[in-house]
Image (cartoon, rainbow, N blue to C red; front, side, top):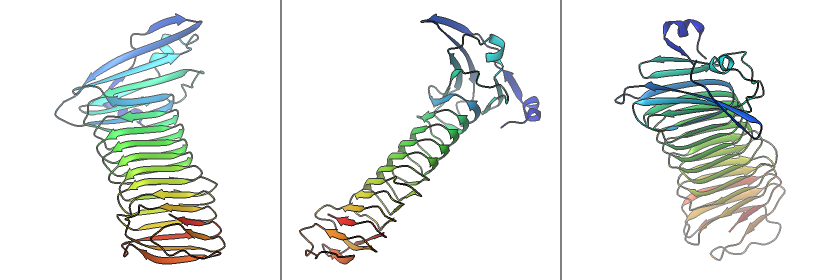
Length: 320
């Protein structure tokens, strides 16, 4: 958040902007818009702090920032109240957008859209609302109290936290740090990998580099495919399913969930699988069939290779 002193010292712009109202089906929508020029030869650093509403940040054009705030169902909202919600402080290629404390939601459906240059670094915080950030260089950091966060097509690193909310990532060039208290985490195409942790929820990873995935409690499951590096995963009571070629070592564990590992026929690896009170099932033609009530299996497959370690207390282990 921006201090009042800092706002007075910087080029502060309060959004008393042109407002438009439309009436349809008994509803009134209001919107205002503002543009800011920035240097196209330098990266933009954008900081956003909102109390409530959906936030959308994405690439539009270089050398310019456009801020749009739309309010739906705004029948009782007057111009002064809407226009004074935000304060914007710009200093060269640094832009800070702050929603004044105490403005209250007034039961509004607010959407904040910020169009930015490609070379933009984002630091965003929303107390309640969804965030969508796409098509910029980064890095990106985003946090929310309650709300989902979607991040896609970012070149550099990404760090996201939510108290309650689902996190979704797609095509991220840098390392991802993702944590949610309650919600799912999904990630596709992250060559530098992801560190994903949820207190209670599912995790789904596809085509990722060196990664960790942790479900701390409950029946949340982990599904991973197309792994390109080391993989460390653990669940509480949920299932854990991995389908990939072992390019590096895997360490898979669960308290009471079933762990299933699917390997291609030509995979070369060392499998060390064990359960305390469950069963181990091996269903591969290149492995000698094991008997019933087996709780530990340790063998090289196709001459051996990367190590796959699997451990569960009361769940079953299945290797195919």
